[in-house]
Length: 217
Ligand SMILES: Nc1ncnc2c1ncn2[C@@H]1O[C@H](COP(=O)(O)OP(=O)(O)OP(=O)(O)O)[C@@H](O)[C@H]1O
Ligand SMILES: [Mg+2]
Image: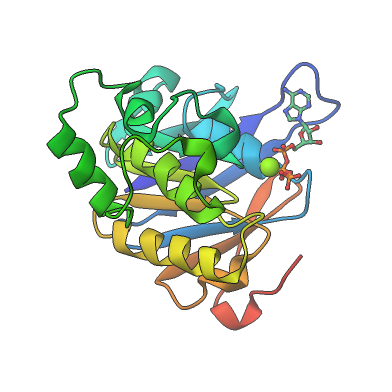
């Protein structure tokens, strides 16, 4: 279980704290959805959890162990918003091997299968994939690191209806093996999954009792 307690984050370049006494926990097997208006601090929260930023106060635990930012970088896989902008490989296979040079063809195909890209050729260039396929590839790259926690920043942004559904199905499948946290402007898309929904407001998280209350920002 991922547990955040009294997190306070105020970068010196910001006028006021972005995260302020923020607490919540994310249960294994459930998906945590965090919604909030633009600029409310959703991406910042993901960066703090993943250890890309350190917070000034509070603690982040994985079960009973408090983790420092470096340990959190190992714990978490982070898929940025529009991850396709950051592909470096000239082919799907190369993209997968960037982090793990010794990945065999069998392992690469196995991984693609896991994210629903079983028909994809390893020689294809990442740029030539559809938006939904690119999101799946970005998730596959993170899965290679075997993260306990998968953090997804706006995973459905900019995708059309059928591609969004594909990505949501994949997320639903992954939740059995990973603790998943999603920040999104579109929480209603996830309401049929096993979710806990929060709204980020003035640096704190407010819980939603039920999915009926999920509305677009
Ligand atoms: N290092 C920083 N220094 C100064 N201000 C920052 C820093 N990081 C984030 N901010 C500010 O904190 C606020 C929250 O930014 P963040 O990107 O986390 O919002 P968001 O909820 O992800 O927005 P969006 O929905 O548009 O992606 C913004 O006003 C942003 O300008
Ligand atoms: Mg953001």
